[in-house]
Image (cartoon, rainbow, N blue to C red; front, side, top):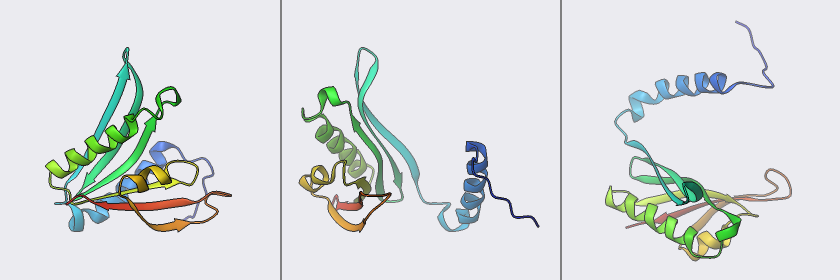
Length: 137
């Protein structure tokens, strides 16, 4: 057996490791629902905002919420969040999980009823990363 360090792994290298873990997990999680969902706001065919998430079992896991700086503060982020939460409820999700950096949207999520359960200080450096959940039902 050889141990190798790769300081510039390709997406294919990373996916090979990921697939190995997925196969290992299959007997335990194979029957668990795992769906992707996204909502977009477009203008003249170009995305101006969007939210992406995965539904894993009965949980919605929000990955990315982005609103172009030209339309921030107009309620679009709140509307996207509301729409993805409503969709999650419709398909049987009971809770949401997400994370955000201290320079991103901590106050935004708190305003929408999310509770911070863990904070990593100085991650990656001079910032914090916050982990939130919210009950939907």
